[in-house]
Image 1 (tube, rainbow, N blue to C red):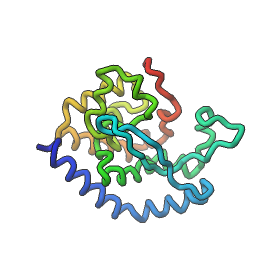
Image 2: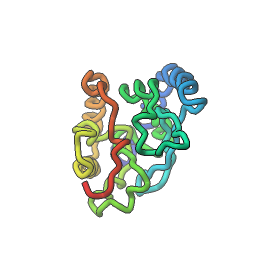
Image 3: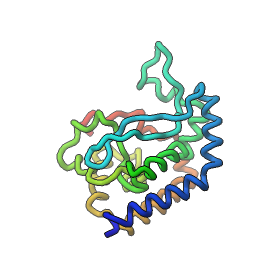
Length: 201
């Protein structure tokens, strides 16, 4: 009952209230990023959702666009703006995904939506992570996050699919809040976006 009905009600209700309460923060970040990114405060990218249905994820744009002589991937770390670095450290770049939750593309809790390019690389077990909606935070994020290998992250994602419940969602939500306010967790920029998966580890 929770998985098929109440989870969506909670996702919609919580994301709507959160967007309203956090609107002053969101507007402030938009203004700051308008200046930091040359008038481009938002980042849009296609990601696979439940049953690999493609949707457009929205995040705050934390990197300036590469110059003509720069690589899109190699220079990602150098392209993070000062405002963007702060937003990433505090996980504020995830705020706009509440819009995706409101629309029904994502859930508050679930496996993180990864790149479309990874879809052909998953084995049968790893691909099961797409049996549920992707989330803003998930079991892998509160159990090691970037310290985990890719295979370990996928194993956590599949564990969540098999153990989806209100109790586990509540555990993940509380652990996520704890990590956001943990000084150690906030002290470094997440490196996952700089380390692409090649299907082997």
